[in-house]
Image 1 (spheres, rainbow, N blue to C red):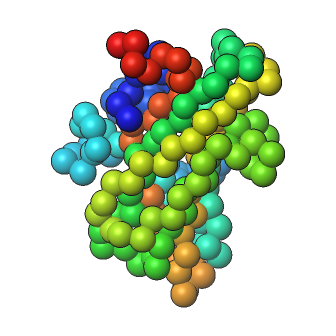
Image 2: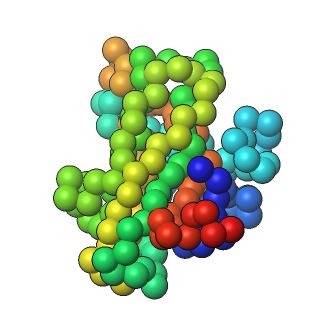
Length: 163
């Protein structure tokens, strides 16, 4: 899925070279990087996971959502190579509850390969928070992992195919 002109996510591919308006769950865990590793464009996000096989999150407030309208979500995610993790997971949700607001999830097993994580969501409010969580599993729980993210899209389903 390519990024739609109807995409309501700001800075979806981090091409500004800055994290804003995304917010990270902890200090110094979200690093904007440029280079040939990017899925699209020049920049991507390198999100460090937490010790104890726990995740870290980036979030962005979305406004002007059309209630009861189907939205399509997608993000490109990669377990970088080499990786000290057995695998990493990406979880995406809306709102403040990861269970009730779940949009999509995927496990990343193959280092160096971009994987599309996608799903759909029907908002109940005109503004909400989009959150993306990355967590990695390792035999050594004191080790942190990394997940690369690029090309984030959240757009009305009826917008696709109209471009």
